[in-house]
Length: 319
Image (cartoon, rainbow, N blue to C red; front, top):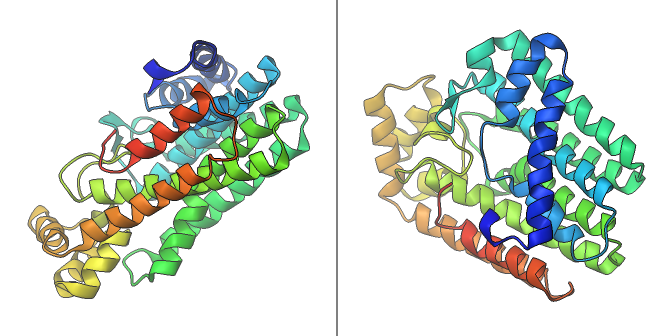
């Protein structure tokens, strides 16, 4: 994805990478190491890329663009750290998590620092529209995580699942696109179109990750195969599979903390024996189509073409 960015956008992203190191260096002494590890652990930098491309459709102030792009990645990283604390996760993308390496107290403090640093950057930009977009996304992330915790091990209805992923995943995609369009000086209609794109892309992204959790590849979020099912997280393919397949076996996996490998494997096989994966992918493709449709009001150019390509590549691909 980075290789196809227009030259100026690629330069923007390179500056983001440098600034993330600087953010870690500003942390309290005991948090510098965990912050640096978390901020440089890899990942596609999709959220800052979305913000940069959205902004580059107009004429953003470059310093404000850098600050906002860093802020969205810092906020995203903070949520990952806190998620791993709640989930007691040992690794992400094959690398030990902050909580595994540094302990719960340091992980929570690092996540808190990064949350604060993100909004400190937005305060420097000084645009209340950006603060509102990020604040709404952060509140949605918190509410989505709480709802996931409450609904762990089921049962979960489709509408509740959709509301959860709108808050926990799609909200930050949407905020990145809205912030970028705002900084670029786009019209309200164009910013609304970017919001539509970002939300639909986020939904498709999460649904695709839910599929990857079950089909034998690490998911887009960097977790191992079956991780969500083992944690008791009820995803869309699991909902579909419990309606038409061996609900008893899947239910046993969901209700068993730290299920043994043979039970987890049986649960995965029970999902794969149904039409749940295909149904989830079809739904994700529909969200991709909605995302691409949201681009029609935006200026033609390399940025819009790359946003369309990003949406088209979400379903059926791993990280």
